[in-house]
Length: 285
Image 1 (cartoon, one colour):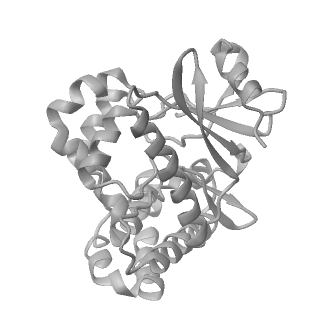
Image 2 (tube, one colour; image 1 turned 30 degrees about the horizontal axis):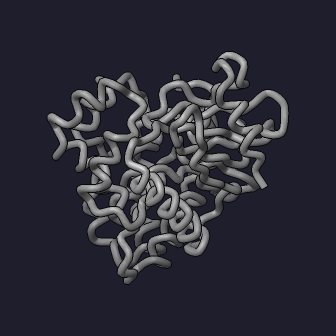
């Protein structure tokens, strides 16, 4: 059981005393791992609070449902708990997650390992993507998945997914579009974003599309290692034929050339200084 008083005390400390900041440029928060104490084996993710108590209660329920749905769909995950923590009169969403070794993070390994090793990691991540979408196929529940390279670790050859915020379940497309602004850590995004709400809302569409999640994975690999782009495209075309037959035609249409990010999302990332690095790594270079 989580010691909420200890967690509250940890979060109140000055950021310099909390421990290792795992990510400095996250879109929703800057996760950190305490150097010692009861949470030294955890990653702590603290999000912006809202004045709407009912919306926060719904967020907590949806997060619990989303974690259960991911696990039920066969997605390997570290232990993940969601709390609404009372901090100085405000209720703040906090996720406490079992820490993964930084050596296991897929993105830096994709940058450093040889072609055969990176293809093995792609296969592991692709297997999680296919297993998830085949499991929820036909469900009446609106549910999405954001299996980017930066959201995976590779543990004993298996891809482990660790990104559960925002919870991509139950919310309508418009609601999720508003959440992308409400919970953004970047004040500039909260100020400028509403002027481009339709484009902000469109960011999520890939997360709710089985073929686009796979194409997105391949696109990220091609951008990380352009020297291996041809091999990654070949892998992607082979993989969808083997494991994602219901969506093969759509996926193959996106794998004729190295997939590119939508122009509006590239623009947002430049505006915010985001470079697409892992959201639990200790640097984003």
